[in-house]
Length: 70
Image (cartoon, rainbow, N blue to C red; front, top):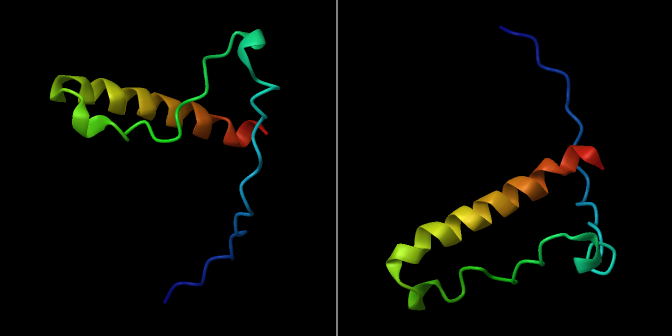
């Protein structure tokens, strides 16, 4: 049998990000995303769906990329 691995730390609660007024248009940052970018997806042409998913994927990659930088 193998030895049990050492326990790993449990992640804590999410850290708050910058407030919109701290990260706003004055800094040249892109505007904050809508609460649900997929809300009107059913009403949009299917040809636009890929762009919506790619935009959200890029936003998530940027957000997740900041986790270790805090």
